[in-house]
Length: 154
Image (cartoon, rainbow, N blue to C red):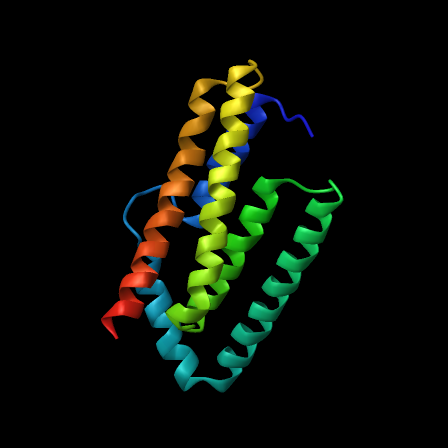
């Protein structure tokens, strides 16, 4: 799947905006905490969040199967994994449950970064295409360190 560099850049920018990763500060923490409080008070919201989590797990499973038969990309699996991590966060899942997903996210981000570097080397991507990918990897690594710190703080 060869995507033109400009289209890739537009897609990565849109992804970052939609995921809220356009700024280094993690503002989702406040929103996630508010959702967790509401979820604990509202059984209907809890049910919906749990159903959403199940759908996100199914999405990841399907995307990973597609990747195995070359019908998907590492970038798409990374995107779906990010959706799953956010769905888990909304339900205040424990760090023990989140760490394996975050580790997988870091691994995929590193793979994606290598793929972009290879494209840059052969002239199929602009050097600036690496920046949003590197930002996503660093964000994933920060999230992993935060989860490990929460686990160790207990």
